[in-house]
Structures are given as structure tokens and as C-alpha cells.
Amino acid sequence: MNATVVGGGLAGSEAAWALAERGVQVTLHEMRPVVRTPAHQSDRLAELVCSNSFKSVDLTNAHGLLKAELRALGSVLLPCADRARVPGGTALAVDREVFSQTAHERITGHPNITMVREEVVVLPSPGIIATGPLTSERLASAIGGRLGSSALAFYDAIAPVVAADSLDHARLYALSRYGKGEGDDYLNAPLDTAGYAGFIDALIEADQHHGHEFDQVPYFEGCLPVEEMARRGRETLRFGPMKPVGLPDPGSGREPHAVVQFRREDKAGQMWNLVGFQTRLRIPEQQRVFRMIPGMESAEFLRYGSIHRNSYVNSPASLGPALTAPDDDRLFFAGQITGVEGYTESLGTGLMAGINLARRLEGRPMAVPPPTTMLGGLYRYLREADPRHFQPMNANFGLVDPLPGKVKKDRKKELLVERAQADFGIWLGELEA
Image 1 (tube, rainbow, N blue to C red):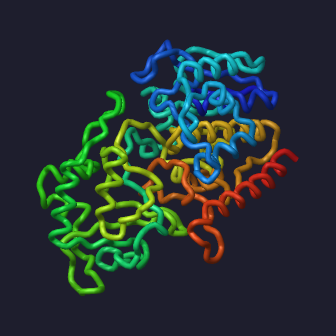
Image 2 (image 1 turned 135 degrees about the horizontal axis):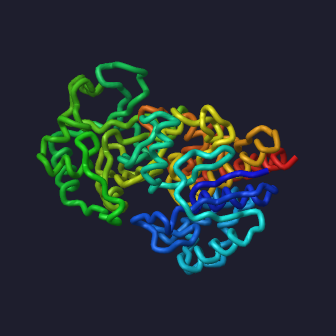
Image 3 (image 1 turned 180 degrees about the vertical axis):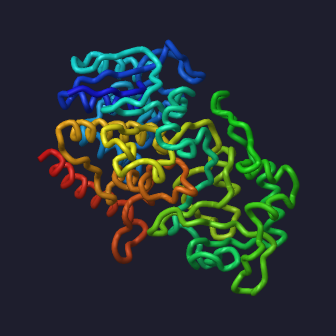
């Protein structure tokens, strides 16, 4: 059996290893150094180009739970991270050089993996596309041609997502603009004149994240950062994402001075998106400023806002349940190009793509963990998110099925982890049967 993996980042490395460990002869294509990117400094596999942290290993943290699931699946990169670990508290922080060197030697040393240094411009089958946020223009064109030109985005304009149970619902009201749509599609936070003025002051003065040069994107009128809109004029947001027209407050019967709308992000209503609040503010500033919004005083952020360069596919509209091309169940997509954010999320989809392609080559059905697990919840989001509003997502507890009945808040995550680990163990047993 033979397969092709395109991209030597975290997802591609995991995918190649998973296939090779299952007896598949893998050709791993990495375009560096033939074609360079503005982000990478070396030609090694699995190079980390942003943070040196894989985030928390604590099981009561979403990223810690995801790591535990991926270790159980046989991740090759997490043991490499363990070997390269540096002090970072509960975070799995690594020495970048040691990590990439260890991963490169491990993967290229596998007898079933052959590495080829060239740019791929045709989608392979059987194969896995794991080219990340800096996919080459020619390959991106091939992906767009296959999936449809509207399937591929080239930058993120992400608004924050907050946990429903962290909002003060007594200060919010459910209503769609002009009464259209379902009554609970949107929640609304009303601001009076003074509250709006204070919020605008804080927004204008807040510190932005500037990031890497390659991460910068032009500001289009349709995706301006909320702080940039505020700087254009104090009333700009009241005629944009904070427009109160058509949203009368049931308490007074009148339209408030301004409104922040929250849009439901998942069917269970556990995650809510701040509509139109894409931002480049630093994370502490997002916490400080956005918690000034009524009802958000104790908000738990499941995803922070951002705007940056990122080639990714609209997975809910364009890919199958296991992230396959709609016309070829032996062509998988993995990593950030599928719409996941974060190192662990990327390598997780790569690992799953490798496992599932090996299963298809053996004539076996594809398998995805149940949505009570972190990996399964992430896959469900990529399959079921609203294609009209799809944005990349990181691991968080809002992705997994809610617990039945009423649960004490201080026990919630512990119980979610217990259920996730039990269900993942059952699924893993069935996978290996």
C-alpha cells in the first residue's frame, strides 16, 4: 500500500507516521527549501513558527484532555515535545530546536517514509493535504479548483467566543433583529449612553497584538478590527456591529443606545460568538475591555478574537465527516487548513487523517471519536458549524456534548473529563478490534 502526504508540519508529520506505523509506504512531500515561506527558519519537519508552547497538560484543561486522547492514539510528536520540554508550569513548553530536530530525525528515520523536497501542485489520491496556513499559491489554486473557489479563505477575521454558562443572562435578552429567525438565535447586551462611551474609550486605548510580518493582512471594509472601527469615529460602531435598530429591549420596549449581539455557535447553545468583534487586541486587553459589556463581567473566553494570514477550507461546506474531499474518500485534509487553531489540534487532525486513510486502504470504514470526547467534539464542529459563519476553532469544553441534568459548575469540567476518557477508551477499543 502506498500513500502521499503533502506538508511536513505538525499535521503532515503525524499523518505520515500514523500511515507508516500501519504498514503503508509513505511519500512525504515538503516544499522547503525548494520553495520557502516567510515564516520558517529551517528545512526541518515539524518546525514551530509561533509560540513554543503546546499549552496545558492539565486534564481539566481542554488542551490537556486532547493531549491525553492523542497519546492514547499513538501520537509521535507529543513524546518529542516531552523530550524537548522546558520549564513552563502546567504548559508543555519546548525548546524549538530540540523539538524539531527530534521530530525530524524520528520521522525521516522510519523505514516506511520517503521524504521528497518539492512543491506539490496536484492533489494526490490516496493522499493527505496538510500544508497549513501558508499553503503555496499553486496548490491553493488546485484546492480551490477541486472544492470550489469559495471553499478556501486566505485570512482569519475571528471574533471571540464565550461560554454560555459564564454569561449573566439576567442582563441579556434573546431576540433576532426585527424579530426574524428563531427567538434564541441571538442574545443581546444593551448599553446606555454612558456605558457605550466608556466602552469606546477603553477600546480606543487598548493595546494591539502586532505579531509576525507574515501574519499581517490588509484590512478589508468587511472585516475591520472592532478597535479600528472605534478609532474611525465614536459613533461608527453604533452604525455597524453595535447597531441597536430592530432590537428593542423587552424591559423598556425601546431600542437601547447600542447593542452587542451574541450569535449561537453550536446547536446546544454552549458557545456564543460576539458578532462583528474581530480584533487584534492582545488577550489580556480582550479580557479587560470585552468584560465591560453588560453580562460579560465574568465571561469565560473559549476562543479569542484575531485577524491573521491563514489559508483554510470551509470544512462544513466542503469536506466530509472525516475531512475528506466530497468526491474522493481517499483524499484527506488535515491541520490548520481544515479550520483548526493550535498545535495540538493540528497534529490531532493529522494523526486521525493518517489512521483513517490507512483504514480506507485496507477497505475498512473511517472512524471518528464520539462528540463526548475533545477530539470528537472538534471533528463535529468542523462538520456541523454553520458554513455561512465558519471560522477556525481551538479545543475547548464548549465543543463536547453537554452533561445531562444540572451539574455544579465547580464539578463540570471534572465530570466532562471522566466521561470523555471513558468514552474515548470504548471507542479506541472498537477502533483496534
